[in-house]
Length: 115
Length: 111
Image 1 (cartoon, rainbow over the protein chains, first blue to last red):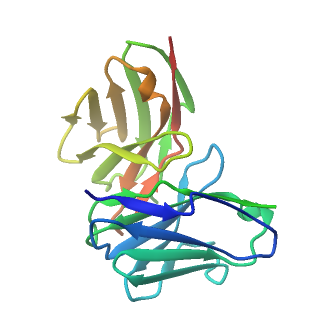
Image 2: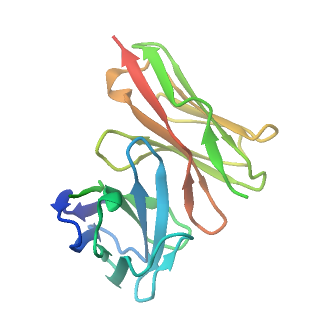
């Protein structure tokens, strides 16, 4: 149980385009989902926390207008990287929790490459 | 403030030997820690956790030790196998229900 999936697993796009990444909890309802970014050989950095039906809370330094997060249902959150640039190339990982303060289950990650 | 860090970026271990990965934290109020394993191109995988009311916790081939006096924790892997090759992160579960990851240690196994 407690499986989290991400789609796509990898995406390559041109600079200036927008990319949407999906995070789904497959066998539980995720009241809270988290989005992380990981640069090569670096640690995971939390970008934002989203609760179903409400606006996401972004970490300091993360542009909310550039990284649009939608958590419209208890099993799906999406991260849209708008007007992507090469410096946005990274590994994006989501996690989901069934309750506030509960265990987080991580997705397999999405590799974004912006040309 | 909250911060979690690791002493060594890389660790090379002979197959069959025990591995010890260390981690230091700075927030003395931290009360819950988690170790994750991340294989190349994948998301982090939960290994073991420990709360501050414990000094030691054991799992299958893994043991986590917590020394609150010096704000240090370690992950011990017994009889290291090739499949243990990965990056290991210690992480702190903050009071705001966020996971704060350390910088990671890459474990490589020598045949």
